[in-house]
Amino acid sequence: MREIRIHARAGQGAITTAYILGYAYFLKGFYPYAFPHFGAARMGAPMNAFLRVDTKPVNLRSQIYEPDYVLIVDPTLLKGFNCLGGLKEDGFAIINDTEGFDKSNLNFKKKFYLVPGTKIALETIGRPLANTVLLGAFVGIVSELDLEALIEALKIRFKGEVLEKNILAAKRGFEFIKSIL
Amino acid sequence: MKKFLEGSQAVAEVVSLCKPGVIAAYPITPQTHIPEELSRMVAEGILSSQFVNVESEHSAASVVLGSTASGVRSYTASSSQGILLMSEVLFNIAGLRLPVVLTCANRAVSGPINIWNDQQDSISLRDSGWIQFYVENIQETVDFHIIAYRIAEDRRVMLPVMVCMDGYILTHGLEPVDMPTQEKIDKFLPPYKPLYKLDPENPLTLGFLGDSDYYTETRFAIQKTHQELLNLIPKIMLEFKNTFGRDYKDGLVERYYIEDAERVIVAMGSICGTIKEAVDDLRKKGKKVGLLKIITFRPFPSEQIYKALKDVAKVAVIDRAVSLGSLAPLYSEIRALFFGKKQAPKQISSFIAGLGGRDVTLDSIKGIFKKLSLNKEIKEEFLDLKPELLQEEL
Image (cartoon, rainbow over all chains, first blue to last red; front, side, top):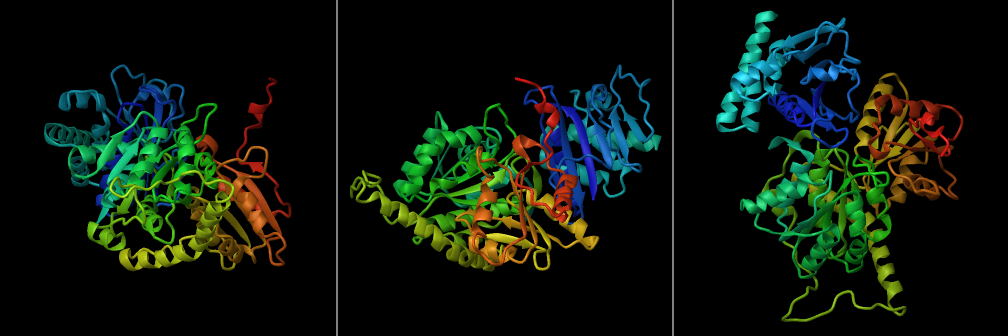
C-alpha cells in the first residue's frame, strides 16, 4: 500500500490533484481511494487531500499520518503546520518552490525535491496552479507510474486548451525532475 | 464497466439509471454534489426526469411525498439539519406507505455547527418507519440504491428506504466502482406500478384522519412488514447476486472472520473498512478477532446478530451517534437482544467513536480489540476523548 498526502489551501486544487493522481494509478490497474479533509469551509484555509493506493481494494478509511509521499502545493504551510510529519524513512516530499520561499529554515533529514511549480505553471497554464507540474515531477520519480498514465488521467479531467496547457505543465514538471535526479 | 468515481457522482449516476420521474432536493453539505449532478443530468437531457427546485428540505420531502403518491418513482437526498427539517414529512411518507428512496449523506447535528461525519442524523430517524441501510464503500452505495428501489416498491413492502452513506468519507471519496448497466438494472428493477395513486380521474384520499379506531392498526401493519422484511431482504439479495454478480449474503449483516472469533467489534458504515484492516493485521499475528457489520439497521436483524455473536466471548459495539441520556443506540439494541438468552457474550462493551468528523484511526480500532482482551466490560467509552478540553470551568 502507498499513502500520499497533499497539503494545500482550499481553492488550490488539492482534491483535483488527488483525483488525477488516483486516476493515473487506476489506469495502471491499482485500487486508489482519494479523499479530502477540509478544515473550515472557506477559500484559502489549509486543507489536505489524501490518496491511498493498493493492489487490492482499500478498506482503511482514516486520514494519512505516515505517508510514503507528500506533495506541498503551498510552501507557506510549512510554517505552522507539520506538513512533513510522519513521512516514512524511505519516502519523499515534493515541495513547490515558489518565489520568495525561504529555504534557509528547511532543516529536514528525509528526502525532498524542490520543484518550481508555480513558475512553470505561469509559463504553461498562465495561472499559478502548480498541481499538474508537481504531478509531472511525481510520476518522474515513482516507478509504478509514468508520464503517459498521467496524461491519460489529465484527459479525463480537462478538455481542449486547458488540457493542452496541463499536458505541457506535466511534461515540464517531468523534465525538470529528470534533470535533477 | 469499472470507473473511478466520487461517491456522490456514483450515487447520481445510479439514481439516474433507476429512472426516477421526479427529483426534489435542497443542497446541504456533504450531500450537495448529488443533487448538483442530478440537476445537471436533467438540464443536459441525459436524464428524463422532473427536477423540482425547492426552498427547503421540508418542501423537498413534501414534493417527493406528493409525486410518489401520484404514482411516480421519486428521489431525494439530505444530511444533518436538512434531514431533521424533513423529519415531520418523513414520518408521513412511511405512514402513507410511499416507496420513496432517500440518500442520507451522514453528518453530525448542530450545535455547535459541525459539517463533518457521524451518523446522528439518520439514527435520530430510526423510529420513522423507514428502512435503513448503512453502506461501507462506494460500490455498496451504488448497489444498495438499486436494491432500495426494488425493496421499497415491492407490493409486500411499500415502505420508504434510506441509504445512509458516511459524509465526506464516501460522498467526497473516489474509488473504483463497477457501475451496473441500464439493461441489468431494468431487468432487476421493473417500472413502478403503484397499488393506489392520486389521480383526478379516480379521486381518492391518502393519509386522512386515522383515529383511535384505526391508528394502532396502521402502526402494527408497518411493524409487521418490517418483521417480514427480514425474510424478504435475503431473497432479493439472492436475485441481486444472480443479476449483478455481487454477493451481499443475507443483506442484513456481514460476518467478517466471525467463525472462531473470541473478540468481535460490531459497527455500521465506512468505519467497518478500518475495522477490517485491523482484523487482517491482527489475524496475521494469530489473534482471533472479527467484525460484525450491520448493513440493515431497520428492520433490526436481531436473530442474525444473535446467531453471529452467541458464541463470541467479548463484543464491542461502536456507535457513531449518541442517545444523549441513555445507552448508545446500536449498543442498547445489541444488549437487549441477549436478554434472557443462555448463550451470550460474557462482555458487551460500548464505544462511541468518530463524532463530528473525529478521525477513527487504525490504532484506535486496535486499541478497542486490546481493551476487549482485558476482563472488564466497558459500559461506555468515548473513543479518543480529550479530557483536557473538559477541564475548564464554565
